[in-house]
Length: 300
Image 1: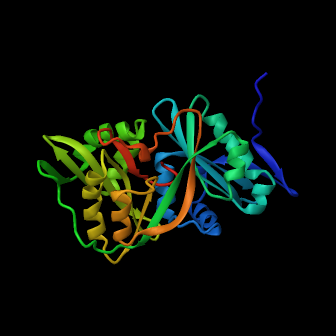
Image 2 (image 1 turned 135 degrees about the vertical axis):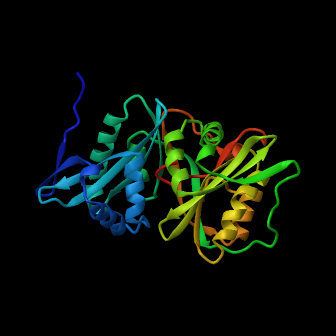
C-alpha cells in the first residue's frame, strides 16, 4: 500500500501545513534566509521561484517556518535547494518532513543537492551519499598579474539570447542533464562570454547579480585554460567589487587563477546525490566539457 505524505505536521504546540512557495509573500522568504545568514536578496528568491518549484511550512497565523525547493532538468533529474529551517525546528523534524514532500513531487528523478555541515546528518539519513566538496570562493575581485588571451585559433565573444542553443548544448555535455529552460532565464539577466573555435562554442561563463554582489556561473569548458579565458572578463569587469564563484575544482590552473583574482575560499558545502552518478570535474581529461562553476548551490 502506498504511503501518503501528510500535508501538515505538529511542531511543539502548533500545527504547520505545506503550501506552495508561490503563494507566500517574497518578504517572508527573504526573512527566512536572513534568519540563517544566507545572502539571498528578495530578487534572488524571485528568480528561483520563476525557474523552480517549492513548498513552505506555514503555521496557523501565517508565519513561514521552513522551505524546500526543487529544480527539474530533463525527465529524470532534479536538484534540491533552499531547504531552510531554524536549528530548533530541524531537530523537531520539520526539514525531514519538507524533504519527504520533495521526494513525493520528484518521484522517478535522480536528485542532487549541496549540503551545509549542519544539514549533512539529515541528508545521510534520507539516503543521500556524499560526492564532492564545493568551494565557495568570494571577495572583492582583483586584477590578476597576467590577463589571459584567447588561444590561437579561438575567438572570445559576448553572448546574447541568440546563443542559447549553443550554450545549452555545451552545458548538457558538461553538466550531464538538459538545463535549457534555466539557461534561457539566466541569459536574460547575465553577462556571458563564449569561446569559439571554427564556429563551435567550446567554453562559456555567465555572470549575474546575486547576494552581496555578483556571481560567476555556470562555467563549462573542456580544460583549465579555456575556462580561465571565459571568466577573466568577468573578473576584470568587477574589479574592486564583491564577486563569488562556486566550484568543485580543488586545484589546478583554474583554481589558482580564481585565487590570484582575489577570490579566497570562504566556506565549503558537500555535493550529495540520491540515485544516478555524479560527474566529477576533478577527473577532467581535457577533451570532454565539465562544469567548472555552479550556477548556484541550489541550481547546481
